[in-house]
Figure 1 (tube, rainbow, N blue to C red):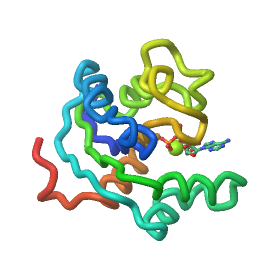
Figure 2 (spheres, helix red, strand yellow):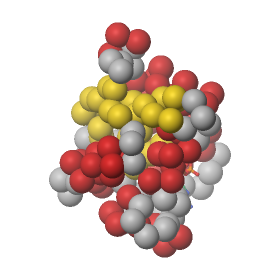
Figure 3 (cartoon, rainbow, N blue to C red):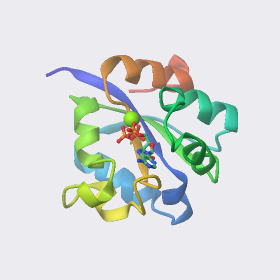
Figure 4 (spheres, helix red, strand yellow):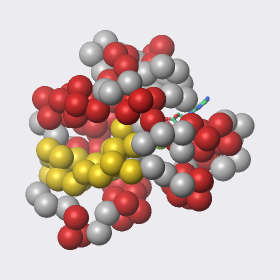
Length: 140
Ligand code: ATP
Ligand code: MG
């Protein structure tokens, strides 16, 4: 296993309910280290670009509206096998299918308002980290 970095977003449903700290604790308890962090609010253009891969999906417009509906916390997580480990800690996209103890099982409101995003592969992780952070922002 190698040390990896992955991009995490704490989504507007979670910031609205003041769950930032409880979600970060889940990452840290899993051995993931926060090496960059910023609270921000996505513009429509940013959300459309970030989720561009889903442009043709029926839920795209609603997803962009949701992701711009309030603040998010964008973070770079670092650790052994960080990409897969983060997705394990997050749980399944649909909270109804998420395993007990996962962030989405405990906190998600719906398949859309599912509290967190995590990169799904090394190439997307590198692109998504670059989307939000410059190298100087990341301190391991
Ligand atoms: P993310 O990319 O946010 O980490 P994911 O990889 O588990 O989540 P994707 O299939 O990439 O899931 O979908 C991106 C996001 O789009 C989901 O996290 C969710 O917010 C929303 N989404 C996915 N499927 C649906 C759906 N069927 N209806 C509504 N929203 C959806
Ligand atoms: Mg995804």
